[in-house]
Length: 391
Ligand SMILES: [Zn+2]
Image 1 (tube, rainbow, N blue to C red):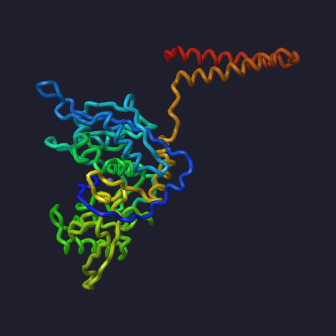
Image 2 (cartoon, rainbow, N blue to C red):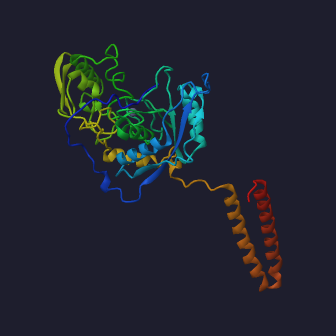
């Protein structure tokens, strides 16, 4: 299973001029407001005092604040999120889902029962001794071309941590940027670097171990990946969008001990078929879909952002069958649907009764038959109204 977390938010300094923040001027209509439906999970099993063995600690008030932060990241995109703590916070005791064991299957089932909303699960995670700090979400299969370094996954919900931690950890990683990143996946975006994760992803996984590689190892891994994927830095363009720069991920900066905020341009050196080569990259650390912490670093994380094409992709995804339920008006309750139908038929009946008054005898029979047919329909709908217990 792949993970998509904004990796450890390193302390980074200095400001950077970014790429392509041009979207706000092109969104003229009202933003789409997408409703969130939040399912905080807990274990079914309890301890001696009756408390669930693993329980969420996030509160509706904290989540409300998070949504405000996410909306700040989405400002200018044409998309905003809404959360009603009174109706859309629905805790569920389900140990398997809480530990990620059956989240995928049950998650999609529950999402299908709540069309019109983005279902978010807040879960403990797979390790019983510590909470996961990560989240995951995936572009729907109809969002657009799948970039070469990732596979298509049909996941119609967003998985998130179940806690708000100190120093912007857990749900408020990146001061909303982390949750914004997961919603970005849900709305059709891939990472700006290749793959679903960085150190264990397609560029660097061939380097043994899981720790930070040496500069030489990281450079050669990046060059091998470039050599195998077209021999230009575009190989490191993870999302196949033109206005997000090729991104070697924070792994390369860690291997170089280079601070992306103070020194954004990075050069890799190595060999392709024995020939010495160099490539220079300049990713945008402030892009929501990167794994960098936004610049400048500070006690409050800086705001990350989307490019124009990322905004277009998200708005386009909302028109696709997998996600357009989010734009539909809420389904009308059955009682008012039935009453509306009865009202329309009553109006037809009244019009026909009026027409009957001045009608020549030869058509009165025909009008009478139509009125009788309408009455039958109206009575059937009234029976249905009673059957549903409508007031
Ligand atoms: Zn991700």
